Amino acid sequence: MAGSNQKFIASVLEALAETERRGLAADRARESLSGLSGEKTVGALQRLARLFEGDATACYLEIGVYQGLTLVTTALAAPGLPCIGIDNFATLDPKGDNKKIANARLREFKTDNATLIDSDFEAALGRLDALLYGRRVGVYFIDGPHDYRSQMVCMLAAKRHLHDNAVIVVDDANYPDVRRADRDFLVGHPEFRLAFEAYSPAHPANMTASDRGRWEKGWLNGVNVLVRDPDGLLPEMLPPVNDDRSIYFNEWLVHRLRQAELAPEAVAMADAVVSGDKVAEKKARRALAARHAGLEGASDGRFADRNTYSNGLTEARFNVLRGS
Image 1 (cartoon, rainbow, N blue to C red):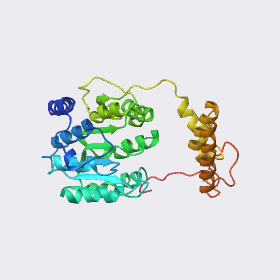
Image 2: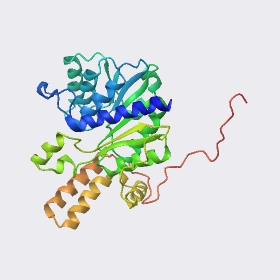
Image 3: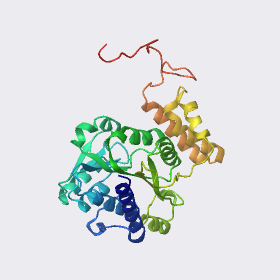
Image 4: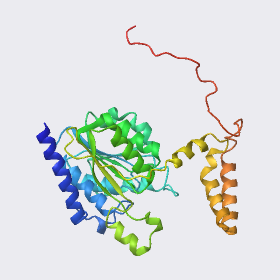
């Protein structure tokens, strides 16, 4: 068993090495398949999916479809592998067009092996048994919400559905919350190892046009690739993180406050205030007021601080042994 696992891990490492050398396995750019993933990320998914194409028990699963770039290109690269994409198109879609674009691309490229599921990712992960039709996830691409909890939920909720040779590709690993979640998952689940990591110096939104073009050819906003390695064939390697965990402690401090939902707007206004930018401060105040008005009294009845949201919960509850 260890021998077959060693052979598979070697094939994963070779697929990633070939991606580093060559980028895309099949270039779809001339057919206007654009998206928010770097070309090497797309190329890695193409090659990794091919490793499972002859396995009747395996499938490809991705969280976060956007406009269908990775779902379509992966399905095209491995036509014998069922490919499933989950997205409720609630973010990065101001005009509500992304689902239409993704479905149009699936039809245009005749990706009969691809299925798009319009659902909240957490709800879908809770019913994966019904969605996978008995298959196990061979390649799992995580590109949904990038907060710490969402990243952990994506990995923990899908873990029991993963193939014995599962490969997890986590996009946007530049974000510290993503790296921290990957690191904590690896520490708590030593049967997985980090096989590859790559980062860029900034988010593409903060790059110059020329720099962005370079990183779009690469891994764009960073990537972590995890592989199941129960025999410990790979030495432990962990994503780098900042030892200062105060940002996570601050989340707890914010969540218990009366106006917790206003945190992003409040921080933006604080930045404008301490920067002395009066124009930005005025704009931030308007955004804060608009956001508060849109919440329609969500904070009514809350305390100024230390809200626990525990009123009405049971004082004591026992679980019951089955059959008793």
